[in-house]
Length: 219
Image (cartoon, rainbow, N blue to C red):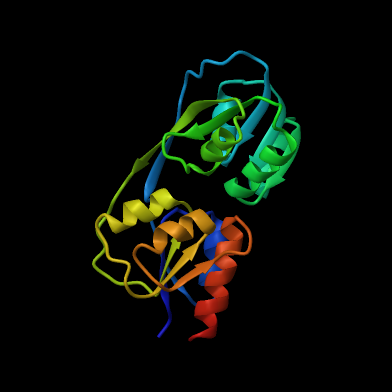
């Protein structure tokens, strides 16, 4: 009997094909809703911007915000910034890593942190600890969309801590495997399940690789 997984984010056609070509059944829904804010009040240009998600990039583009130096989390975020002619000064895989780079190399600089209304405390706490001046601006809104599922799954794919929170509002996460895109997402999942696999890189494709590797092998 083939494995069945639930993804808490609707996948692109080629991503779905990766799962289905491996003989794994797929159920998908959006556990969270992202809304880009229309009016962001800033003084252009921004000298140093901290950007930790592709959603933040989309909001910056929508509001035509000019930035001199970008400090970002994730390769996909970096690629999206550079594709739109933003200069990426530093990149890290996780917020904690980026915070470490900033506190070690850029203590004298000031920053603007573009984020969502639900975000990790890693970067703000680190900047405050080292007395680095920064302004936090919310540029997109995350809304949880909980949904009850009657069936159980061999694996559930999570791409943010918010998605874990949304799923567990109406479902239990006791059995199966939680496939997580990164450390912060895994930390949230650990509150509900022991069996967790973290992707090698913070990308959807890396999560899917882990799903195929684990569940195809166990058939």
